[in-house]
Image 1 (cartoon, one colour):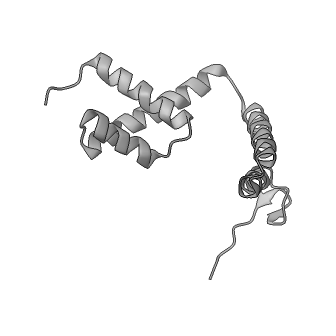
Image 2: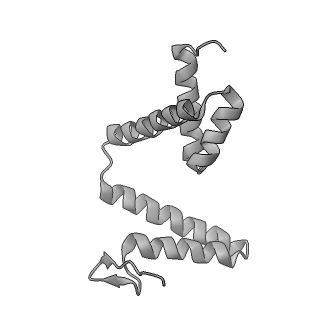
Length: 121
């Protein structure tokens, strides 16, 4: 199989970045890369790492700080919870609330704003 050109590699990284930002897990992205482009598992991981690096660089370039990102994340989760509630999907509502609890440290598992990790036995 012929080696991919620099432009093809760039397009692949952009495609994987898009999948990641759409919420696809790393495993699904890796499977996509292997099936779509016939790359090895190792090459798929390299492409995936470059896609994540590109996402981080894009976030860094915007100059967004952690507080702004947290505010956006909270707003997005609240909107998702509202949509799930309208769709009568209690599992999704609970998942959103659980994530908000974890992000903000406001729930029962928090002590002075610090997340407490339980050990399940």
